[in-house]
Length: 398
Image (tube, rainbow, N blue to C red; front, top):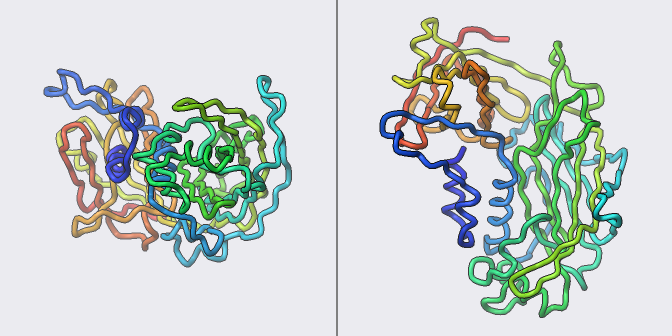
């Protein structure tokens, strides 16, 4: 995952210090010459969401939207089979204001939010939320609700990236001051709340943001939403909790202060969930053939599941050296050595190793027919070494 984040970072300009803060590559140390270190990968966090937001704001796009964005504008790899499951009429069953103790007045009508579209299978939900600025004459609506390291950056993040009437070299803060407008930071996330039980804790796996015009923005969320019961059936009424946040920003030179003016959690009852699945398991009869070359990493099996949204895969892995964690790069590859293209729900994740060093890798690729064998590519992010386990045969179908 980190090598893909690095590729994104190479394509955008980032203020001094922010690149290192986002990547935070562990120091390899002097013993790296003698021993490969594998450290933990978690799910895609808010740091990656920040990268996506920076890429959106720094992309040089000027407001010119001709229509409001939907799921297919973001998830362009979504197969045709998913079309019947895209819900364009999404009902919100409850709205709860989250009143923080230090911010007693957190209600505001400055920005309105609408869940525009959803599409879901038994493990993932893709959501597009439209944010509408109610008073564009006095406010600017921008990405973010926590940090704005680029507001005063005129070189890396000029206001002209977003506004045609911005002056050459003008920062977003200077532009807002000249236009006599206040900046609103908007942010969307899935809620972590006790109400999630018994479905389990979940959060956004990835998040994208695009400013459609001066008054509208679209948030695209990929959420791990469901847990199946023993019969592999989701809840009759799967529920998604989404938190919408708005902050006002006051700029003073290179510093700013912010005040939260909206923090609400909405409850969405998801309908028309795609539940059809077909699964195949791949493994060699001889466990030794599933070892990643001469490393301490052993792949127990590869499981591939097709849904209407994509082809998902999981790999049960054991690192026999309990001190080194699970930091590896991985991908399914075709017989010609080319990488399988990523699926709709993103880059994937690796679980935390248990006390035996066992963990599970999850990912997705664009939908394909279940093959009679799979090939898996691995890499060591520290040494650059690459390995491939070829022709892992099909052992069973479910």
